[in-house]
View 1 (cartoon, rainbow, N blue to C red):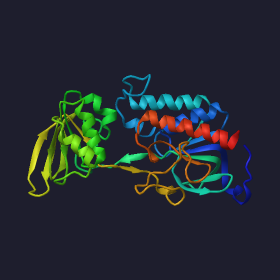
View 2: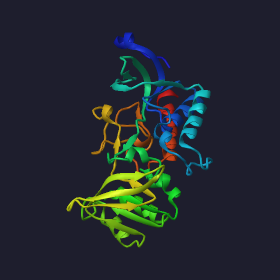
View 3: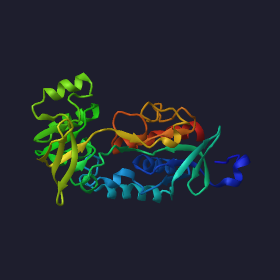
View 4: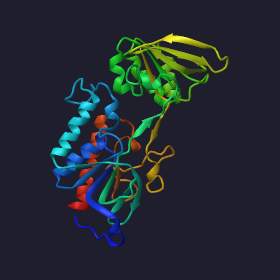
Length: 316
């Protein structure tokens, strides 16, 4: 694909048909599909390709890969894309400049790279409690996704932290797997919609710790105890548990594009059914876009759909 670089030609070190901002499963799937369609593609990632997939100890819900480590699945995806000719760049994208027939990404080191199509694949990070022990026991009893990790707590005692829709959905999901589910909420009433409240209140497997927050996590090699603090009395108590699911929301990594593409009130990028944003030639894939289910399999589908649509619309 040829571009008229115009006045920015002196700033552009490279150019590609497609550039992804982010290197998670959605971007790696896009890279595979792009190369199979003959498009050049650069996958940019500020950390490790595979994104949060690398933080998941064991995956058991991705078709064809039973009981596989997250970093192993990420490596397989990257190797597949690389074998097909996808290129990778470790760096931080600080700005995106939009144009009519192409767009430009600016890297932290000042380098500018041009592409006909950009895929926003920055992902979203679970909000953390930021209490002692949380980091140490992440993936060792502390999780941020019941759909991802709930299976590993079959017939065990677990907690869900939060009082909104996400937390209640997590609790309901876990109630079908775990022996018991305790919801810990800082207030004396839930924020979830009434339909969800009715479901959790009528579920015998779910109990509640009201007006409580997590003070700290404790254990040896695995999480064993949660210290809860009553926000009204200040009283603390040590509760034994097998696992904790933190469900206080997600933060999409969309800061650099919020003044470029349309987002919802929480910063999730709005797209059409083909993953294209409000700006032509800019697509959003994976957890950064507004969607109902954030899983590896849906992220991969996003990447495939975006490339298929972009190919027909801008390259065919």
